[in-house]
Length: 334
Image (cartoon, rainbow, N blue to C red; front, side, top):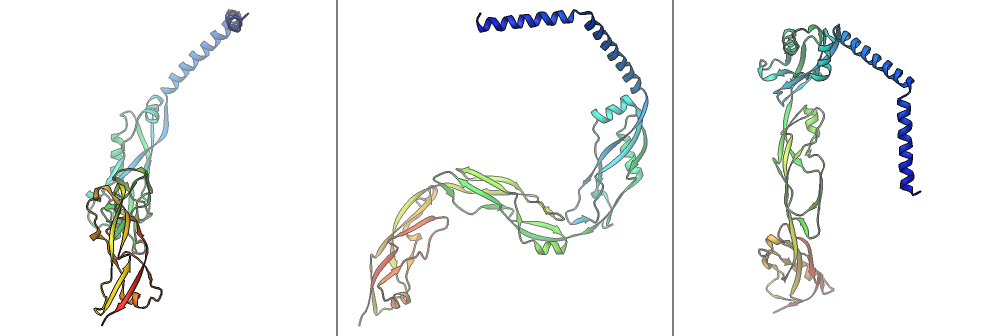
């Protein structure tokens, strides 16, 4: 017999055994018993849900329009614990199906310069009852009132710096500095804390395989006891495709006395650099300078001098000078 035939025969035998088991008298009796158990549980559950119970529910507290230049001297409560009484069926709705709107503490409506945030017991009770079903009894709630003191904080403008890494694909580079808008933000804290803050960092941001300019809204790192305004900045990372450009630059000595003659070998050198494609046509030899000082020539006995660029355009990278040393002859004329 093939393997498939054996499998089909085994399946058929198992099905016959299951049918025989289900036809047994003991199984039928057990099934009837479990049905009665289930029915009894249903009646008990319905009866239980008609009885009254007490439960605790939590209603959040939301603080709106809190001025950035104040700080609470103690942590205000984040929720009100409410004890209610009602039928079990209603309480199930509170526990699983019903969400509660937060009790709002709007600091815009408070009297100016009181130094205290106060929400009375009557206000809290009124907000709670608005959200309860008519049959529900409000037994108690804690805290009975909200009474939190606050104090004025100092303000300082602090620059924002980008925190993260920028990786580009081959042939692409950052063409300029990272731009952050706003560059500085208002920071509110105690004088002691403000004295220690020199910069505000963005959250760590990682850029991978960059091949174009990227602009993102980035959140600022949170600092305990400090309020930032705004809490996010716009970061622009300029990324462009780069190519190589080679230019011939003359070697000049601007402070050479008139009774001296300078001969350099070679008189011009090649400067190779990596430039953005968008600026390739704009970069010329006039943007570079190689100046040597007469004092360096006069004190040099070897007749060779190392070269360095004295002027180069911004955003140009990977600059090389070839050759990077020249030979010279300094002659004094009559």
